[in-house]
Amino acid sequence: MTTTSPAPAAITAADAPALPPGWVWTTVGEVAPVNQRSAALRELPDTTAVTFVPMAAVDAESGRIQHAEARLLGQVRKGFTSFAEGDVLFAKITPCMENGKAAIARGLASQLGFGSTEFHTLRPSEAVASEWLYYFVRQQSFRDAAASSFSGTAGQLRVPTKFLEAHPLPLPPLAEQRRIVAEVERRLSVVSALEATVAANLRRAERLRQSILKRAFEGRLVAQDAGDEPAGKLLEWIVGSREQGTGNRRRGRAS
Image 1: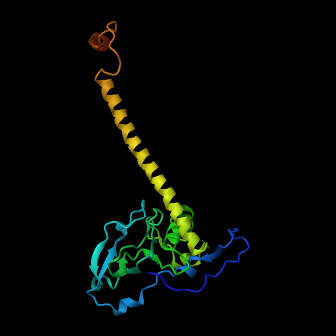
Image 2: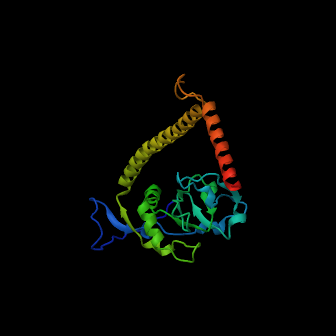
């Protein structure tokens, strides 16, 4: 769900990096109102089916909403963060924010969702794609900047709304945003496949490591040499040496 807004305001700061032709500096808040509640909620009956997204339902690694819950509007109308289809969810509290908890709200019942009050929501206007905002806030550099803006007490630190509203955002034309997003997703799919291969190889390496150790202690790692002194004889010698040493110490104390 998108909202109409005027053309994004350009940032004219002298230290803003140069952008490609057709791009403009704006702010997140200029193109995506933060924590905007849908006016239509007031008109909907409490029996309206909606989607509920607890913080735990957002997978920090994949950035996807998993195990969302079905609720009735009357159950969540008050005391929760509301959002709409296509909104971007961004965890504002530590450590969820640093862990990368962010997602695009997709497949919502009645195109409406509710969730943890520890989410900020970004509602994309017609000037920006949901995916453009999503990948922007998923950057480590953005999360580092967000962490530097934390307010609150230890253990309850949160990213303030004004940080998101004022944060600079490079904005290409909408069609270019979509082309870039498609390429980002293509390349990230390659990265995901590589990660899966690496993970499988690491598991294989661990199994091999344990197999080597097991064979070592079963006497199956190297060939047996008939010329080696049997371990039993060595053990007898060690035991005998200990007994002899014990006897010498006893005689010494007796004298």
